[in-house]
Length: 69
Image 1 (spheres, helix red, strand yellow):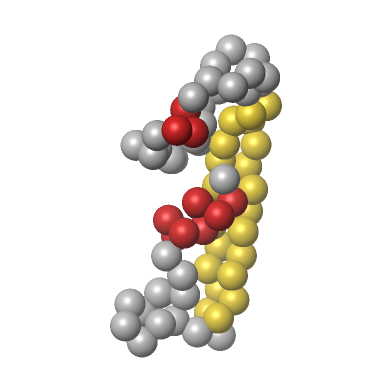
Image 2 (cartoon, rainbow, N blue to C red):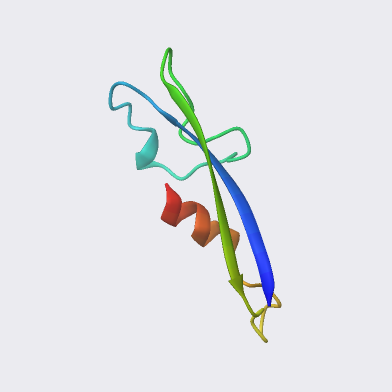
């Protein structure tokens, strides 16, 4: 068994700002980014499983990010 742990950072703005309408270009600092005062959160996700024979990965981290956000 393999474990894949991913930390996903994101901001929660008090008002709708349209950032979620476009794909993120830099998700390291958090997406969507904060505009003014808001909540900044980090969520840690751990998956357990066997790596895919095709990719060698437990799961595509972009799918994890998309599902969490």
